[in-house]
Image (tube, rainbow, N blue to C red; front, side, top):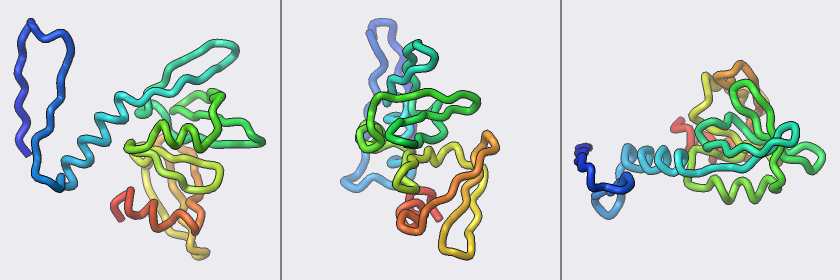
Length: 146
């Protein structure tokens, strides 16, 4: 992969252009996901205040009792969206569904461990542990690159 940066004071905003063959390679796909994660933002609330979080700030998103919670490294927020709506907003990013009620940011994983019952336990960078349900293991392995 070759990266070229052109600087010019006349530019109003940053333009990212990716030139590749018909089928982008793995590195190019990862780069695209990273760029889309930077652009993807989720509006959340905490104690009556509105915040805009980038996808890269979010560790995981969980639905509990029809409420959607967004977890960062050290904070918890609420989203007015349903989990499937959040999933649509974050498609083409590093998020993947690991159970009926959880979306996970694979870039925030510290380690992964297979369990005897065909599930996977993931250890997050913030110390939390989550389970990948059997139904979602194949998609998780593909996204995580295992």
